[in-house]
Every structure is written in C-alpha cells, then in structure tokens.
Length: 310
Picture 1: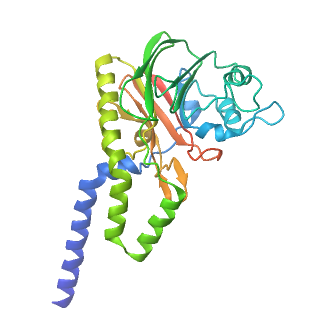
Picture 2 (picture 1 turned 45 degrees about the vertical axis):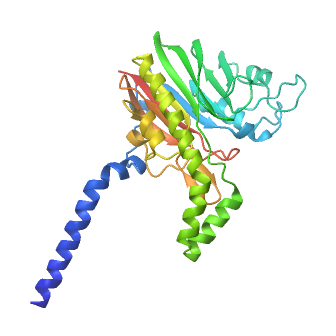
Picture 3 (picture 1 turned 135 degrees about the vertical axis):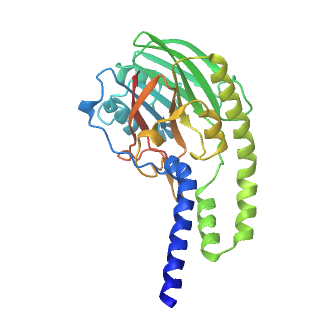
C-alpha cells in the first residue's frame, strides 16, 4: 500500500509538471529555442544577411588603417548585406581620429548606401544608421516621445523588391553597473520588498514609455501595408515583453524561429538578457539566427540571420 501511494504521488508530480511544461512551452520556446543550424551550402544563394548591432558609440575607440576600430573591422568581415546600427555616434570633425562618416565611406566601400539619422529632429539622441548593399529609396523617422531613443523606417530595393526596414532603439532602463551590484546583493540577502521597490522605481517609467513607442512602431508597420518587412534593433526588452510582442504582431522572430539557446545579447555585469531582435514578415524564410559573441567592443553582441524571399 505504501509503495502504491509513493508511485501514485510520483505519477501525479510527473503529470503536473508535464502539464506545466505543455502550457508554458510557447514562452519557453520563444525565450530559449533549440533549433539546429542549417549548413550554409543548403541555404539558397539568393539569401540576404541581415545584422543588428548596438555599437555603443563604436566604443569611442580610434580608427586608422594600421589599427582599425574593432567594431568597423567586425562589420567589414561579417559579409552582411543589411546592417542596422544603434548608438552610432560619429565624429563631425574631418581630422578626428575617431569614427566619422568619411571613415565609413573609405573603410566600408562595399556599403554603397548609408543613412544616418537621429532619434530627435535636432540631431540629438541615439544615432540610427543603415548600411546597405542595396539602394535605399526612402527614409522616415517614426515619431514618438523620447529624449534619446528613436526609430527610423527605410524603403530598400532588395533584388528588385521594395522592402520596409525598420531600425529601432527603444527606451532604456538607464541601469548602471552599481544598480546591478545592488540588485545581486538584494537577491542574495532575500530582500524581496526592497528589490521590488527598486525595480519599480527604476523600470516603471521606461516600461510605460517603451509601450507607447512600440505602439507607434507597430502602427507605422501596419499602415505601410508592405509585403516584405524587416524590423531590427535594440528593443531594450525581452522576447516575452509587451514591446517585443506588440511590434512582432503579424511578424516572425528570427531568433525564436531559427536560433539556439537563450541568446543573451546584452552582457554587462549582472544584466544578461536578449533585448536585440530581428523580426521579419511572412514573405521571407529565415535561417541560422545567431548572437555573435566573438566581438566584445560594445556592451551588446551583434545579432544576424539569413533571409530568403519566398
């Protein structure tokens, strides 16, 4: 009889956990997908390599022919066709040793088409840059409230088709290394109430702003009625957030569909999360979305994938 109840208890535990896994699998699969890589030889040659990268002002490192800026060097060797950059701070001085627009044109001639815009009309805020091997036909700033962040939409002629490319840098939490240290301290000491108050005070305003920004981006995409859409950028929010969910409405997520593992894109101290995303419309097939951890010049890792027109 004792054995019966023990076995019954284990069966109930197993069924309960199986049901929990079943009902939460969609969230788990979105956050930690487990897809296998496809051999590049099996991907159609007509593929487009798309990359998004928050470059943190190119780490404010110098650039010259003998010692290239590591971020520019990575981009040059990436082979990407479409590159969306956030926090692209460029020097306006012609004789500056730091990265400027002339630097891009000289060092990256393969990108014949470049567009630099700013989050705000007064040319302040996050620099959003598109590097493209295909003609850029049109550029629009998506209006929404922010002191630093922004989104820009481009119409790009890719292989004879008009593609809407949206580059985003949504509102940041403005968390510091000190915040991360304090967060870990509270977790270790079990100070749940204090931790909750700190997180609400720090994150609440950013969540609210980001929600409005996501609504604006989503509305712009819907109104465009574009058949082919690519949305990239630093969303400053996770795969299961409102911002990502709202913008991804009607679109697919390249990492969730073709990536493997948690794919943390932000890696600074205690904060390890996936907040950089590539979304695409049903007019494409996606392959091998990758968070590339081979370059450490920014506090973000670049994310890239292959897209193929259906």
